[in-house]
Every structure is written in C-alpha cells, then in structure tokens.
Length: 248
Image 1 (spheres, one colour):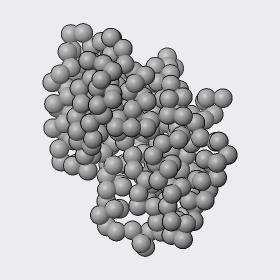
Image 2: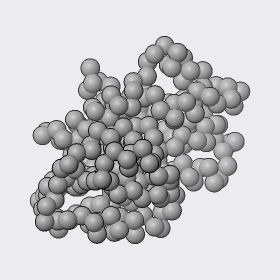
Image 3: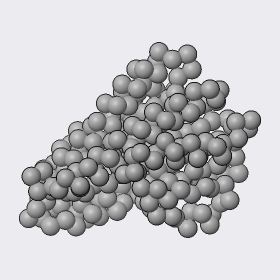
C-alpha cells in the first residue's frame, strides 16, 4: 500500500492530484479547510481532515493523527504533497494588512516547512520509499507588482527544498524532496488574480490575457505530470522543476 498526504484538496490542482492517485493500492489522507464530498464519493481509501493550515501549533497533532492510521506492515511508500496555497492579499505591500500577510506566509511557506519536518521525523524509522513534492510557482522568479508575498513565499519554498535536499544527500536513506513549478493552471487562484481591481493590482490584466489566449493548462493535465514526476526513478533530491518545460 502506498500512502499519500495531500494538502489543498478541496478543489483545483489538489483535487485533481488526489483523483488521479485513487487506486485500490493507494490510501489518501486529504487535508483542506472544507471537506470535498465529491472526492470522498470516489473511493473508500480516503481519510479527510478539515484543517486550516494557519493553525500552526496543531499541524504536528494532525500529522500524528494521520500516521496512527498508516499500517507499517503493508506500507510500500509514504508521500507528502504540499499543494495548498493562497494568493491573497494581492496588492502593493503598503496596502496589505498584518493578518493577511501572516496568513499568506503561513499557508504558502511555514506550513509546508512544518509538514516536511514532521513528515521526516515520523517516517525516520519506516524503511519504505519516502518522497515530498512541494508545489511552488514560477512566480518565485517571474515577479509582478502586487504579488510580493506570494512570490517571496514560493521563492522561500524553493530555497527550503534545495537546502533540505542537500541535507538528505548526507542521509543513509534519504527522503526525496523536490519543488515543482506547475505552470499556468486554470484554477481558482488564477481566477482570483485576474478578477482583482486593476487600479490596485495592475497585473490583473496580464492574468486576464493569459486566460483569453488559452494559455492555461487544466488541473487534470498538470496533476498527471506531477504524479509522473513523483514516481520517477531518477527523482533528484532538492531539485526545482519547471513542469512546463518537462511537459513539452
């Protein structure tokens, strides 16, 4: 049995990843603020956790609860996919409120870091394939005014992945970890960006143009490429992967 812990499965890319991982030989632990009943109706091998990743102090308890349900006697692999993300506040930094700044960095950066740390600790004595995929963004490099928080968080996630990869290269049985830029995907995050007030977020026009020109990929297509990369034999510790280039 392969076990998967996936964040942000209520819709979009996270839901698509979970759907494509459904199999009699897979067991999914899905995490999001809202329960996805569509997903639950597709398999009995899903446990759902309604959880807000802003509750930083409770993440370790959440992971402990998940690992209690993992049967080590039949486990072949345990995988963590840090997919949950939020784009707001989408504004120039002087207009952002402290609560919004904190929530953005919590969900996009701090939660994946904590989840990674706890995952590695809890799997340390389990002799199975262990891999982590952090869903990042090309926004870590392609910068736009009004997206300083999202871009900074994703850049931080990439550097974190690279550093942990270096650490794991020193381990006798390393945990695989990569950061993936999924490209431009037709999700609620994209819709939120293009529907912003252009007077406070001029870059909304760029997101609208991308949609109008049909440049967005579907969550389903992108999810398939992510899963293919997750199971690659030459899984490279600490790599930052531009999935758009990989998908060509």
